[in-house]
Length: 275
Image (cartoon, rainbow, N blue to C red):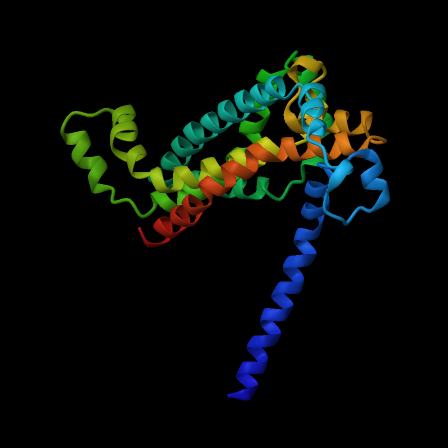
């Protein structure tokens, strides 16, 4: 009994220490975003207080970051890319499951193998090709996200669709539905749990992505939040109070989204495993 109690106590202590370790950077960023420049230099770890406490950092960073414009850019690119990934990946996975041939198996494993190819290995040829096609813009960026996001999404949909009885589709076909109607009116509504999971995973990836927009977007009016934050932080790297306030502002949308959506990730995976 004593050994069990000691073991549990050690687990709790280690968990607390790890929690402090992982949360300490967030504490430093958040507290110093409310300090003046002098307050940061005096003591980084102290809470903001007295004459060193200010809200002006956020107001100035909000304006300099052009938050609304960059937020709309990120929102438009993320929603468009995720929508296309969900539509095309679900249709592709459905056809791969229902077309049970050696070619469909080969194509499925081709998508799985594509996940092993690092982006850095193909980014220069990709940008060169997209440049020749004059698609180095948000539209081209959406198509690139569709290509890179389809592999994992197809694999997730593929496993889920295998558990859907084929008799449902046969009954719909007998009732006069064509292939398009069978998918949209019968199959796609049943994919809601895994669609939520696929959407959340892709939204979080695309929203936080920096490298691909940095290679593709070459105009300030097209910049997403991570890209705008990169240039903003470089511009204000000596003004840590503004830089940290800008960093907190850029984190807020995705943190809110994750808090709202995290239960759906677990639910989607669980429903998919027991369907």
